[in-house]
Amino acid sequence: MQHWTILALASFALPIALVACSGSDSGSGVGPGSLSNSGAGGAVAPGAGGAAAAAPGAGGAVPGAGGTVGGVGGSVVPGAGGVILPGAGGAAPGAGGFVSPGAGGAAAGAGGTSGAGGVAPATGGTAGAGGGSVGGLDPVIPAISGDCPMFKAGTSTATVLGEPATIIAGAQKQGTGSLLFYWYGTAKLGDVSFLPQAIKDDIAAQGGIVFAPSAAKNTGGDCSGTGTWGLDDFKVSDQVVACAVKNYGINPKRIYATGCSAGGLQTGCMAIARSSYIAAVAPNSGGITIGYPKLQDPMRVPNVITMNGGAGDNVIVNFGNTSEGFDNYILKYGGFAVNCIHSSGHCGAPADVYASAWQFMKDHPFGTKPSPYASGLPMGFSPVCKIFTMTSMGPIGGY
Image (cartoon, rainbow, N blue to C red; front, top):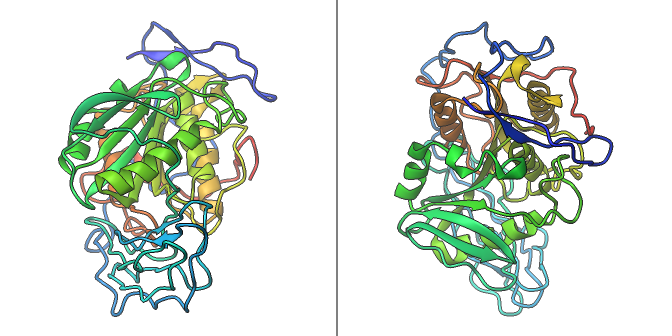
């Protein structure tokens, strides 16, 4: 198994960067002493009856109290979950403008009135297949800014706001597809080829998209602490999200991210910097170090599953610790976390662990709370994965 070592790149107080080297995988799979995952090892059986999808609510959410959407072209557009799509000018809904589904149930939004150029109120959302109870606020989808990429079935390339990318997509469907961002590691190692083919195929079969940037803007501030990605790279993500939801029928409650090493750190940063629309993330030897901003929206917190090589996952920092710090960050703000400690070294998440991570993301569409895994992980989940309970290890960059 290939793993990564360091290129020294200065970033804030901590240089972290990665290059390829040969050699066998290191690590025993035993996490650092401070790691804390529930369970004493081995497979974790589900709670009584196993994890089950929540039944629809008795009445769904109560419509807003007449909130309005202002701004030029501001509108509340129909879509799964009654997602708020601001028009030009970034209009925000007024009091009661959000339509929040009940516990797993569909809710029709009587909604507020539309602004200039606005369209009809949203029709409300439902919990996706396999998801838990969906409550709270809906994702906030960015406005389209500039030209959209052309999404088409198969593997293609595109340039979005000057950033090239590989796009893997299924045939277009309406409302069933997921959008998964994949971030590579330093020197473009650990690229989208590290994402198991079975996951790509499953995303395509549902009409979804894998979007994998093949270059970085790397401006606006170092988000991952590696000098590989910058905060401005998320401006590209915003455009992709806006275009994919509007033009390709992507379910706005199913927007996820993953990546390896520096890309795994960018994944953790994305969960924080774009919590307004990211549903769940799965960093592979990632988490957070330094450079990330404040949580974008404390009312909207993604759920997370981290994958790492524990005590043997070392490249300048220990990625068991960066994963743990990230899990603690998410728990502090009310999210749910699972941590998977394997013995396959840096970026070496085995196929069954990655499969469990993808299942976790599918089972946690935006706003899923409580987690359907709260009483135990489902049957068939990788035995190295455990529900994470909070520890004393905070993230390097603080909360």
